[in-house]
Image (tube, rainbow, N blue to C red; front, top):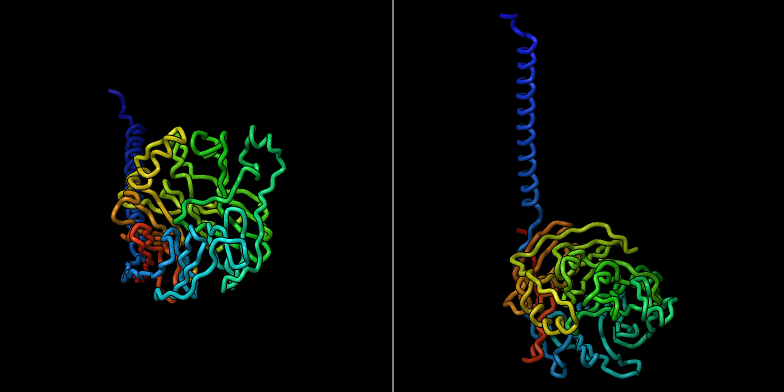
Length: 395
């Protein structure tokens, strides 16, 4: 027999020891990771969580209304905007009727179309399909300016060779007569940010992929309402379907120097800066969302499916940032508008702080003295009009 191979035995022992050491370190790391994961979960659990401690329905008397429109909150009052008559019905925060303003017509105390309304200091900014009107707090007209979308391209070029960067192909966006169009004034003299849309036979959401890839969703207008810049993109979720034009819209709100954008088919909230540069996403998926959407390829298919899409499929709805309480609210409908209830997400920072069951058409409008207000019941058929008041408390 030859001499024992001590070198082999020593090497084997070293290898065994090294393997043991590595396995021990991995086990320790696994325990550390596990502890870190538990710690992260505990941190999430220990983050601020809210519960709704009251919810009241305040009914309003507006006998001359058509009951088609939306509600709008200020520190002084709550207003129902009648989209059919272009009227403002004003109430105090307890729901008592105060005054009625505007109405269709061409005079200084009239307004043809109220697609959106916002307040800035002691002024109301009112948006129609073609112009912006500036009123004082008593709805006396101060100024009225037409939108100028501009663009250097010829009509022939826009018609036959459309591109997503052509200003002249855009118009002010709107979702429905039940929704207040967001109008966001920037610092004095820097203009406004408004949602924009495009409809074109060769570049549209009904049968063109390029539309979802490149067409802008908001525009920067100067103080004279001339379009200066386009920006923002649709969620890439849309590219998974050919196509979902009935869900082709977005809600957005401002939070400090950021824009928060929510799309109906995407659980994420998209964050942009005021120059329209994409920054990040946040947000959590809703509960029990029905998302087996049915794509369409033609205008006729989409139109015939409109009510089914809205009433039966889950979608994320209105988003709002309350500056006073530093909270983001996002409404969503897990089973569509035809369900008996909706849900409301509440975000503190980037963390989900509550996911609450709420009535259908529950869109937070803001807060006054710690009480939150939401739109509301607008029932044309039964001529009922109401807003919701609620409070949140930490668990």
